[in-house]
Length: 140
Picture 1: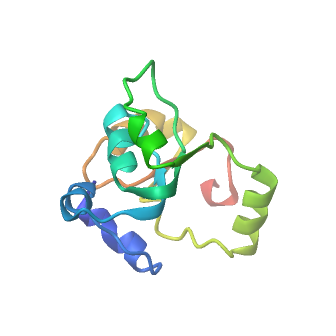
Picture 2: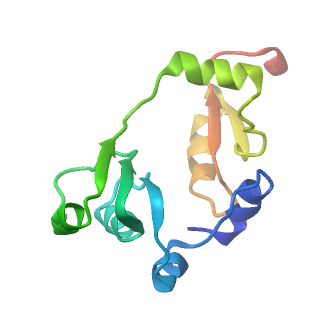
């Protein structure tokens, strides 16, 4: 959604691009992950999925949505719902530092600073805001 966020992912070796540019190019992918939680996001993701491809829905819609599932049937697209993953595996990967997350959190706040954190999360220069709910050594 935001070009200013691209460097965070490009430095990790990932290719980036705006959804609108990808849709305009007609490019399709074997695997697409929709994390938007919106009907428009699902529609865009569906239109970026190759025939016989896989669309992973990593979000929950608020309410019902009018989805045209004809494309899913005609193009034989596999839909996979994924709400949460195996936390033990995820935590082990984070602890071993095999998953590089440095730079993904743009701002950190203590629980006492929660109102400031919520305001910062809405600011254009924010990427991901974290709130510590328990004191850490750095809070001393």
